[in-house]
Image 1: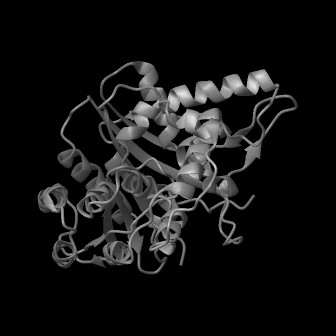
Image 2: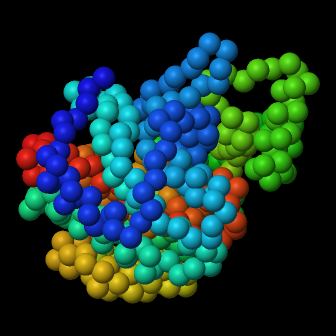
Length: 378
């Protein structure tokens, strides 16, 4: 397994300092449950995981990231809020770049707040800390790129789409291939297909109830699932496949509006001006979301983000599907967009999916020290 070189102790200490100050240090098991991670992060993540299975045991994988295990440990404490610093090795393959390290050090900070807590100040604090940590490595070619999954949802609402189509697009927000598939079928008529009794039955239940029902079907049929997919993931895949066949498609005009939205990548002032020009017919909530971004930008600069080093890109995404609000990346011009120095974002919904209280808040960031180090990757 290819491992990243070590960062000199002095540089690592400087990179670590902004994130570790005032946070509880925490660790996470190197072996993580495969099924849970695929359910939360998406099936596309499978190709990047190192799967481990003892004879007769459940499939696990080497820790690809810390967010899910740290979130689970926070929920186990029963505390309403918490700040956790982590530092350790993560393991991910890069199928498209076989020369890249598969074993590397990550450091990060996860912040959890009580249900209903304000989010803008917390977003600004964590993004600014990620910036300070990345900058401490000595690079002078960094920019802080910003995105927002919730802004995409607000734009979709402005288009006044059929509810089923709007829901499909929002689910595809962090899954570029699914989103491109929706754009590609713009103008098409729904297919005439036979209804699936099982999919219809699952669709009428909540996600948890659908998973339980599918497990009961498996038990009655004597079926043992394979491949690391859990009942919740399989149930949702069956439902989405049925929806894909019968749901209305975007009109050509609506698809063009979405393409224009996803193409916005500029300084924040220019990006927000461009977005105001392409809002759909029901722009009320979208206008409010843009006004909220003005406040967020002010808070970011006050927290220490670089006023002249910010970019806003509506298509900014992550390999993980659980982000549902602000997303950000610290990028180096020398390394390029596909090797970010730091990444992070808001993931409130992950807490509820892991059994936490409704309305609880979560935002975090991760920094790759070797990429931040000025003597690191070229």
